[in-house]
Amino acid sequence: MKSIGVLGVGDLTEKVLRGLRRGGFSAPIYLSPRNALKAEALAKEFQCEVLDSNQAVADAADILFLGVRPESLESLARSVNIRPEHQLVSFIAGASHQEIRRLFGTANTTRSMLSYAVETNHGTVVLNPPNSDIESLLSPLGIVVPLQREEQFELATVAACVNGWFYFLLHDLHAWITEKGIDSDQSRQLILGSLGDCVAYSRLHHDKTFSELGNSISTPGTYTAQGLEVLGHHQANAAWKAACEVVLEALSAQSSEGAKK
Ligand SMILES: NC(=O)c1ccc[n+]([C@@H]2O[C@H](COP(=O)([O-])OP(=O)(O)OC[C@H]3O[C@@H](n4cnc5c(N)ncnc54)[C@H](OP(=O)(O)O)[C@@H]3O)[C@@H](O)[C@H]2O)c1
Image (cartoon, rainbow, N blue to C red):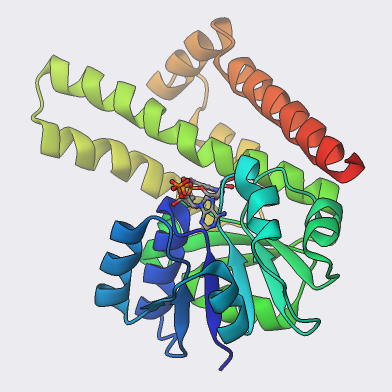
C-alpha cells in the first residue's frame, strides 16, 4: 500500500482521511503542519503523522493530496519539490490539470471531487482522468465515477455543489413541517426519508429515467401532481438550473485563467 501525504489539512481532507481510515486504509499518512490543531487532532484519532514542513511530507509520501483553497495553490507549489514518481491528487475546485502540472512540474495529476459524505464511506468520488491506482485508493469512500474529459469534471463539480444546496432545501422543508406541528426529530426523519426513498427507488429502477419515475408517482388528480403544478408555476427547477449555469461559468473561467498564467 502506498503512503499518503496531505498538503493542506482542512475541512475536506479531514473527511477524506476519516473515510479512508474507516474503510481500512492502513498505510502511513503524513500531514502538513499548518492548521496545527486540526492536524494534531487527526494524527491522534486516525494514526497520522504531522511533519515539520510541506517538503518533509512530499519527501515521505508516495501519493500527495492537494487540499488547499484555490488561492493558496501557488504558494503551496512554491513550498515543495516533488519527485517524478509522485502522484498528485487535487481536490481543489477550478484548478485545471494544466495549472497544477505547470506549478508542480509533473504530469502525474488526478483531479478528484467529492463531498463531506465520503466520511460515511457512501459518498460519490469523481476522478479525472480515470486512474486505476487512485480509483482503488479512493473506492472505500463510496461510488467512484471516473470521467475521461476535464470539461466533464467541471460539470461534476457543479453536481457536487448541488449536494450542498440540497441541505438548504431540506432546511426549509424541515422548518415548514416543524412549524406546522411535528417535532424536529420526526420532521427530520420525514424529510430525510422522502429524499432517501427517492434515491433508493431510483437506484432500484436504474433502467427508468427520473422523469419516468416522477410521472409514475405524480399521476393526474394526485396531491403530488397538484404540488408539482405549483412548483412549475414558480419555476422552481429553473432557479436550480440558473444556479448550475452560474457556477459552471465561474469554474470554467477560473480553470482557463489558471491554465493561461
Ligand atoms: N469543503 C468542501 O465541501 C469542498 C468540497 C469539494 C472540494 N473542496 C476543495 O477543497 C479545498 C479545500 O477546501 P476546505 O473547505 O477543506 O478548505 P480549508 O478548510 O480552508 O482547508 C485548507 C487548509 O489548507 C491550509 N493551507 C493553506 N495554504 C497552505 C500551504 N501553503 N501549505 C499547507 N497548508 C496550507 C489552510 O491553512 P490556513 O487556514 O492557515 O490558511 C487550511 O488549513 C478547496 O480547494 C475546495 O475547492 C472543498
